[in-house]
Structures are given as C-alpha cells and as structure tokens.
Image 1 (cartoon, rainbow, N blue to C red):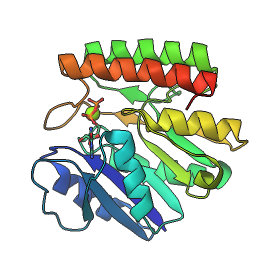
Image 2: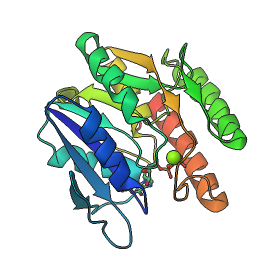
Image 3: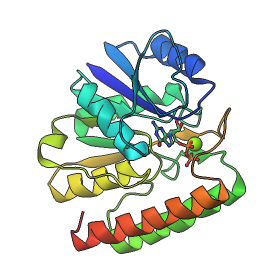
Length: 219
Ligand SMILES: Nc1nc2c(ncn2[C@@H]2O[C@H](COP(=O)(O)OP(=O)(O)O)[C@@H](O)[C@H]2O)c(=O)[nH]1
Ligand SMILES: [Mg+2]
C-alpha cells in the first residue's frame, strides 16, 4: 500500500489536492495530512493528524510513524507537486529504493517564480559540491521511497529538507536512488512558509547547517 504524506500549514487548497490524488492514484493508498495550522482543516478522503513537533521535516516523520503502507510518497500541499506525476515516482520504485521528483532532470520543468528558481539553483550547486550525491534535485520535496529503507537510515530532520537528508543517508547505506522528471508548478494558493524574508533567511541557514552536518557525519 502507498501512504501519501502531505505536510500542511495553512493550506486552503488541500481538499482539491486530496480529491485529485484519490481520483488519479489507482493502487491501494491512504492519504495522511500532517497539519500544523492554527485550526485543523476538516477534509474528506484523507486522515488529518495534528502535528506534535515543529517543522516540515518532523511533520513528515510523524506521518511516517502513523502510516500503514510499505511505500511512502511525500509531496507538498500547495499545488506545486502535481498529482499527475505520482505514478512516475511509484513506477520507478520497481528499480530503485528511493525516487525523487526532479525539476532539473531531462524533461523536468519548473514554473516557480524567478527569485525562488535562483535560490534553488544556488542551494543545489552548494549541496552538490559539498555532498557530491550525484542527484540533480535533492530539494524538490517530491519523493517516494520504500519504508524499509528507514530500518537502516535514521533521520534527524532539520528544517524543510528532509528528502535531501534521506537521499544522502540512503545512498551512503547502499540503497539506490533515482530521479524522475516532474513539473513543479507555482504555488496555487496560500503563502510560502520558506519564502517570507525572515523565515527565508532562517531556512537558508538551516539548509547550510544541514549540508555541513551531513558531510561531517554530525547528523
Ligand atoms: N505540518 C507542517 N507543514 C509545513 C510546515 N512548513 C511548511 N509546511 C508545508 O510543507 C509544504 C511546503 O511548504 P512551502 O511553504 O510550500 O515551502 P516552499 O515551497 O519552500 O515555499 C506545504 O504544504 C506547507 O504547508 C510545518 O512546519 N509543518
Ligand atoms: Mg511550496
């Protein structure tokens, strides 16, 4: 079974995303919304759990703990990750343990706003030069993996880039990691949690810390 985990913080369009996923994903699946909004959304077609910890990475971990699937797929709740691309990530799990949706793989695309494209480019260059992972887009946030990977790979999330940590540690533990092209849409509704000025600087510092800590084996 596939457990689709969607972290949300004040995402007004979550119901239409849930409906689209339930329409498009034909395999047995569950959708778990790990929510950190001021008031919990009431939705149909998914389970909502109130986040107990802080940050996006920890929200995904809480979702994993509550999941029953042997496959985990995590995506954002703001419309940036297209439900139409889910099947590509799931199919690629036939030949890989971890699959990342990549904006920068051949045929990948991003319609994000220019300053965010630039930030992605810089962080991508920075992380690939420090960590040398051979992955084009470890920060897209759209990812599917076999849950048993977490038996060997222990995650200690810092900030939002839990997939970067997962991919790095999984590769080091000998698991295979592959990328498939995705189309990254501009956020469809609501506000970015990383883009606001102070939040953006804080998250940038967390990414830099995370990358160096991974490199030095401190995390
Ligand atoms: N539960 C939870 N969800 C979060 C948190 N921070 C961000 N999110 C959600 O994670 C996804 C990605 O966040 P987003 O604001 O789009 O990040 P951005 O694309 O980098 O601007 C969205 O669905 C957010 O609602 C958090 O602290 N807790
Ligand atoms: Mg977003």
